[in-house]
Length: 196
Image 1 (cartoon, rainbow, N blue to C red):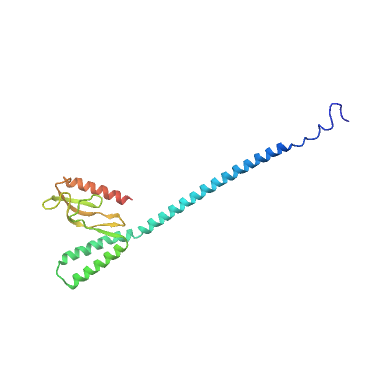
Image 2: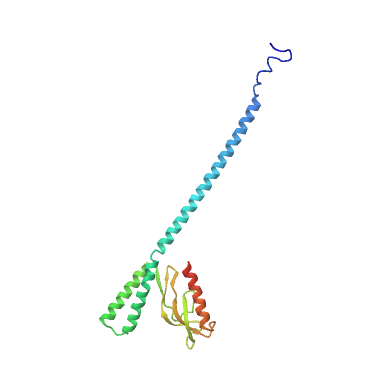
């Protein structure tokens, strides 16, 4: 019971042509290529992020290892000062007590140096506000202007990082005009270093 207007072929679906099938496959292929490219880009990004995290971790571990002894060595600084003061009080005359004290101090300094500690004893050197703290100034006399003429307390570096500035008397007459400037400049430099 077909009406006259309908033909039996119109009710059946028209099979896609070969050209349409190829175009659909090419479109699918392009979508797959785009998906693969996006996945590769994401993989590269994740790999770069992992590499950056690895580098940060290595750097953090290296810094922790490099400065692991900082607190211990910082706590030993008063011991170094006491031994140094004891040697100065003992004078230059040889005695078993002085020799033992000197040997102990040298051994302790060697162990500290093996762990990256470096002593700052700047007598005769140019005043450096990053490593020295001027507590006074004196007339230059025979000393070069802006040089350190006396050290009250030796300073220390730990692997080139300032652990404690040297307390010094600087020769005035050059750039150094008053001790207040020196103390402020040295304190500022020391505070910057200690904040690291």
